[in-house]
Length: 215
Ligand code: DX5
Ligand code: ZN
Image 1 (cartoon, rainbow, N blue to C red):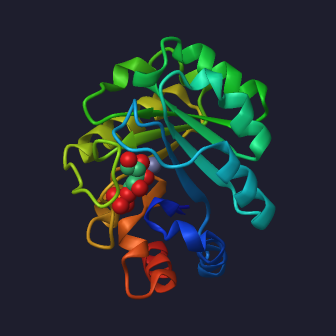
Image 2: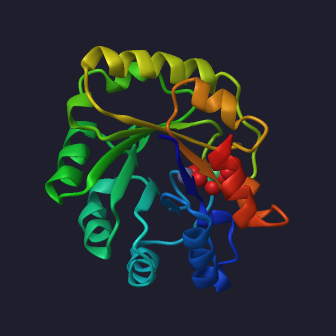
Image 3: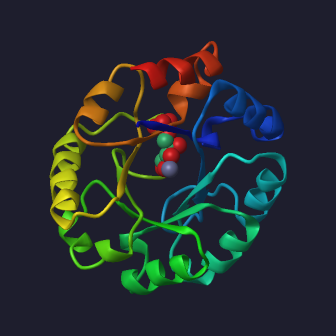
C-alpha cells in the first residue's frame, strides 16, 4: 500500500489549520513536517511547538523530518510534542545508532534520512533499529526543486537491501515528486511519498492528493 505524506512546508503557515483539515478530508495518510534549523540546511522553518499544536488538531500521523544538526538534543521534545515518526539525517548525527535507539526509546517510529550523495552503506549496521528510510530526491532545504533521477536506482538498491534483511521497513522518498513521476518512484520500491509543491501549488490540492493516491 502506497502512503501519501503531504509536506506542509508548501502550505500557507498562517492557514495551517485549514491545510490540516483539507489533508484529512482528501485522504492523506501522514502529515510530513519539515523541521529546518538554518545550519544543517539553509532554511529555518518551525520546531516542536508547531508539532504540539498540530497534534491538538489532527489524529493523522505526524511524520517529522528533522533537518537539524545534533538531533539527539531535541528527539525527546519532538516525541513529547506528539510526533509519530521521527526521522533524523545520517549526516547530522555523529552517532546514528544512538539517535535511532533514542527515538525508539520514546515509543515512536524511527526514521533515517540520506541526502542524495550519501551511500546506502551507512545503513548496513543500523537497519535493525529502523522503521523507515527516507531517501532525499533533492538536496534538502527548499520545497519545489527538481527530482534527481539517480534516486530511482538508489531506491531499487535499498529495497533489495531491506528484503535481504527480511525486515518490514518503509521507504519514503522526498523532493520533486508529482503526478508525472510518482509511478516511477513507487515502481522503484518506494511506499511512502512526500509531496509538497505538487500538492499545495495545485489548483485543487485535495484533488491532487486523490490523484496521487490513484497513480
Ligand atoms: C525538502 C523537504 C521536503 C520538501 C519536498 O528539504 O524535506 O519535504 O518539502 O517538497 P517538494 O515536494 O516541494 O519537492
Ligand atoms: Zn521532508
